[in-house]
Image 1 (cartoon, rainbow, N blue to C red):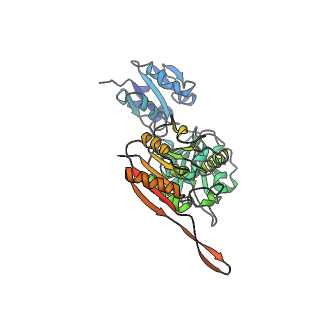
Image 2 (tube, helix red, strand yellow):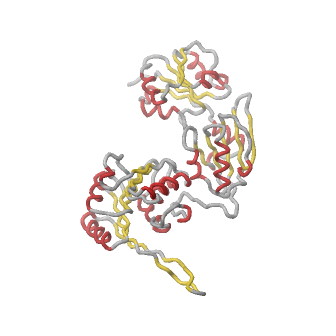
Length: 400
């Protein structure tokens, strides 16, 4: 059995004084201490070899593995397993070789300062990640705690809030929490102007105006929230499609013929860390998809230029596949072979030729066939009537 040699220690603004006696003893007995400049300063004067974060940061794992057999401490901020380096190390090195020493982190400290229950808010990080990903969490009466990426981040987030009708949202920035230089800045999103420390944590209490954009995480966003050329999976059909695709935490979707990206975007919004690859041959639609992903808080959408099935070669195997941009036997075979076990495949068709192909495929492979049609009220002179949209034939099945 592997023996623990690597200690990952959470440290706060109060430095060694904030550690338990046992954890402090581990740090003081270390042969090597790895961390950022700030961490080394917080650790004070300890007679150990000091190593800064390697550049590029991906070299950290190989650097640590080269130290196996020595007494090594990695310093991290707060809880090393909550949006921190500890989880990354634990995926690459046997956990039996690691001892974690958590400290009260920024989320707990900020929640305590605000008097908020941790069970009743969303925690997220934009540290070293696109700030736009917080947009997916903007909802009425939502409380957010956000690890930021620098002194400009609160101003950017204030802009996102104001643009979407949440300008009266209350924002609080904390700097150096738990230390002698702790600072607090309060204001509203619509006129946020504070100059804040680069290392900060942001608390947001979302307050919606009467005309605020409503963007729930449940699929079925209004069509007008997307940029498109008219060819897209419409709101009600999109909601039914996502229900069959079953978004799950960390799962990967292929959106084949993604167009404006509406299905891929809603898939990523619907579950934490859900990922999507959109395959689209038309440049103008790829532009729409990229813009929609950014505006709706899922900047990680990957977009591939090309036609299926050729464009599917070499892509990571998906947990779900949506085919909305044309189906053929060749596309189905390529998708079905790539799909992971328990993967979900959903195909929407509007033409008679595509519907005939779905009927043939369903007769061979099973699954469920449904007909979806939505009618909307329109004006007919001085009266109103129903205008039906084109019916959609939907085939769905699970790979077992």
